[in-house]
Length: 399
Ligand SMILES: Cc1ncc(COP(=O)(O)O)c(C=O)c1O
Image 1 (cartoon, rainbow, N blue to C red):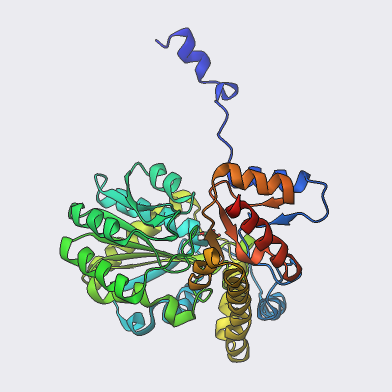
Image 2: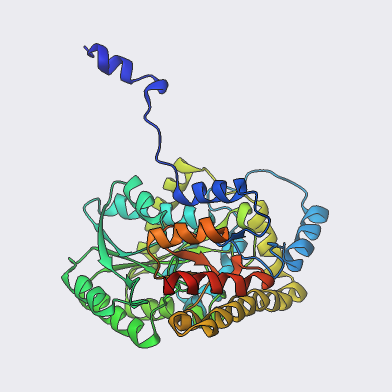
């Protein structure tokens, strides 16, 4: 028999409030600020020099083809668009694309791929611990916990020194148990922008393979850092060295299709048979969660990559986004020696060594909205906002 309290606690009205996402709170605060000069660097998407997140021309063209040629919206099955996954394969895997021990499947964005990958780990090894660098993208911990896996933090970045805590990271990996999972950002680390150097990747890969750890690479910004191949170098090194690897990939940024939810999960095991068996579980978990991924965005990306003329144009549009990111970085870095590290980092995000009080001070005085941690999106800045932003940051650093 349930007690009266238990019985009452089962009503939906008894649910406690969810602690709201601080980035969503930041957006609401920024929207409510009436000051016309306000600057939103809390935003998580690419913006051009005048503050727009445009649809890529190649995607617009692919959508036109899709509109004219698609003749059914019948179900595709839990694998989604198989051709999409085939076409992403060489872009992501490079020389490993022909390795038949690697299989991939379309997912609802990078988030879907992360969840699916962790579901698979929880299925095979519910006692696995997941090592996660700090700080990390705030959605990583809840996704890991949602499948019941234990999370262990390892030091990744020193906010005050503005550099990677590499020795501490290696020590933590050396302390891990065989079978533990190591979550790594493939490139353009979110929230810090601090990517491992080639040499550091080699060292991380050596420890992971020597200790029998399972690498899980989250690569959501391929092409936003140095280039498509350069940004996948760490991942491909891992694929060369490790028998089992999981990869969560997103096209939402590099094809600028955020809301259309386009991503994929790839996995490698020691044999084609084991990979096929693991993929059986992947399809089963996908079926339980979303049955099949949404089609439109992946079909558009597929059409870009399957239409020679569009495929040829896409790297140019991607390079234009990357060039803006890197140009803004260089401009910020040149403003003050204390900001020079920003010019050596990659992707949209960096972290300022400001205290929470300083972040709030900058918000109040200059209407500049960044996360309390000091994380900001370099391309949240319009071309005409960069100088005002750096002046405000330097003023806060001087105070
Ligand atoms: C590090 C990281 N991984 C994964 C994702 C997921 O991307 P999406 O689900 O929008 O494809 C993001 C998005 O911001 C991210 O920053």
